Image (cartoon, rainbow, N blue to C red; front, side, top):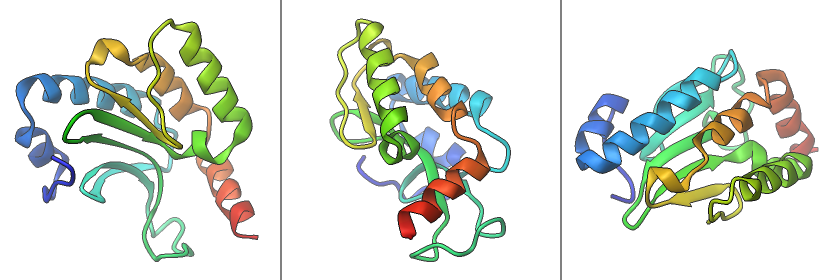
Length: 147
């Protein structure tokens, strides 16, 4: 599944094969446990998204909510998207160093961390990355990128 038409997280999870559902649910749980106040879980872009509601910050370049993170089951892998890691060089460098220190093989694009099995992903590190940027800091990063 590259992009889901599911309207709710529960519908999205129900579409997944058991092994992927279990993996996505575990990563989701860690994200929710570490999600700073002000962000909400939604279905957007065909995946589970963690966003700033438009009611909180409507002044976006595309009139869509700003996304802190997302979680998806793609055709050949699963992925967690960490936009704050992509947006800040210091956070990126910290994340890469901590990931490598786990001894797990990293498969990362700009903000996308791909994994085929849950044991290949340092799930607690994902939670730490989510927790490192609160709502105000995330909005400051966005504003700075637009100036």
